[in-house]
Structure formats: C-alpha cells, structure tokens
Length: 182
Image (cartoon, rainbow, N blue to C red):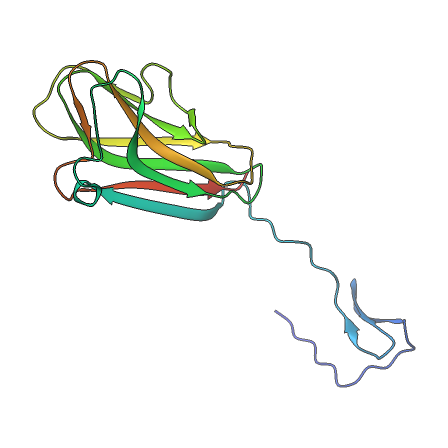
C-alpha cells in the first residue's frame, strides 16, 4: 500500500490536479476536495441480510403448542414475521419442534397464508402411532416477491388419531427466518 502526502496544492477553480496515472482530485470553487459519488453498496447474491428468530414452549402456551384430530391443516403456536428489503430477496425458513401422535399426521409451513408444502402431506408425513416424542425439523426457501411484512407459521393435521405438536413440558420450539440477497 502506498501513501501520498500533499502539503499544498493550488489550481485554478474547477481545474483538475493530476496526482498519479489514472488518479485525480477535483476541487470546487473554495478549493475543497470533491469526492466521487460512491454507488450504494449491494451485498452479493446469497448473502444473509437479516435474521429473525422466535420461540415458544408448551408451558408458555398453557399446554401443547397444538393438539388436533382434524384432517385439515391448522395453525401451531409457532410463527415469526420478517419484512424483506427487496422483492428479489428469498426467505430461508427453519422450524424445530417435536411431535407425539396417535396415528398418521402431517406438518407444513405457511408463508403469508399460503401452504408452501404439498396440499395433502405438506412437508412431513408420518404414519402409524407412537408413544414417545419425535423431533421435527422443517426448512424451505421461499421467494415472496414483496417488501411487506410476511408471517411464516407451522401448521399440522391428523389423518387419524390425535396429533400433539410442541414437545414435552418446557421444551423450546424455534422458528428462524433468514433474508437472503436475491
């Protein structure tokens, strides 16, 4: 790295003083240095621009995060909202929780009120009954094409029996949203 030390420069107003090959300084009428305009910085495609995280526990929710016997998807008490900075941004969604079920069950992620998984089996389907808790880890990359706030939420449904979502006691369930530069 080289350093240039300037003790005094003088030039007629509006003139350009050549410093080195290809490098110039512009002076205004008061002899003040005029710096070039720097374009707005843009993060490279794939950069993480912001992260939003939310948690919930069964005890904070007054029972399980969600219990259902319905064959239609219904909202689990695990959601977070993010406001994308650009319509070209993508949102990476991560959900971690657990479930216990009496029969076949499915889980999916909704973004802005739209099911981001399959209409019948969502993003995760399990069959048969179990008598212990299993972990759920869902993720998806969504292109919402908006700069308005968008809410992402876990949904579940039971094909048979009862489905419990949220883990046992004070197990922490999380949802993490990451805005990715498009």
